[in-house]
Length: 317
Image 1 (cartoon, rainbow, N blue to C red):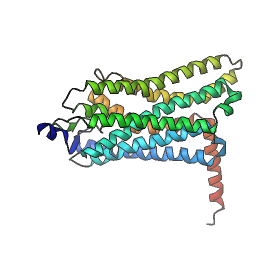
Image 2: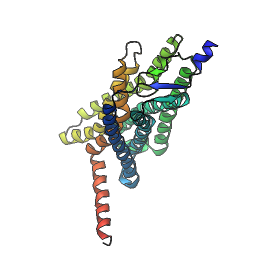
Image 3: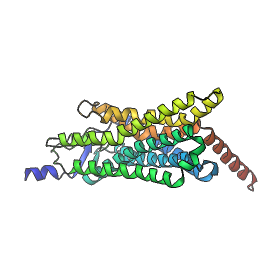
Image 4: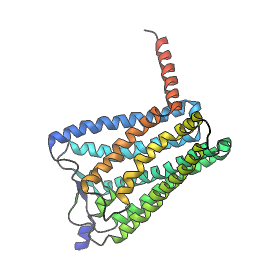
């Protein structure tokens, strides 16, 4: 009977970032603004790619998927975080906690695989440009996108199922801003070595393997760029990869630091900051990185703004 009482927890309490009211109000306003910027930035990127036929290429097809992942990831965490800033009882029901863990973990895994797919796309563009269209055809791009979404979702389903089938302790306090995997596992009353093995395996499959594929792709890309004779040619080749390389550096570093060694991982405060980084900062920065460092996207923005200004100037006053 005691085991049953421990297993069927009806809700968890998220400790969040602060218990001070003034601090919570400040964080609410700050994160709300960042979340709105994230939604607008990523939705505008998707809309721009949809409207401009020059951006109907494999690179921007994958960028559309990345923007959708970023918006979904932020939405899986930030609205609940904002709501908890304004209430004293920061509870989250058991099923909502499981759903949040599933979606955040799935979307994180999808993004890592998707970044590896985008690295392969850049590799083909730089190292085999004459056959780029033949290799990166529509069917292959669709298959690679499906692989990204399916692999991340399956991994998350397995991790979530394993975690929430274990008996939970009577302590329902989660020292985190959301139902993050490592934070929830700490509440389990039995030995969690099997969970740690599962986390390590998924880290290898969906984090380290894509990371090594990205690393290998960029070794070949840099090697090909160095063989280009003209300085202008090298600069142009590097510019095709600069935005993606920046996003890769942002996304993989902290994830490796967090998940590859659960026993000697970061502190609770560090975990919260890392979650905020992925839930708010990275999704907000990605559209800016691809807009500011990409001539094609900037050109499409200028074209869209010029059309919009021309349309508004013809409207009757």
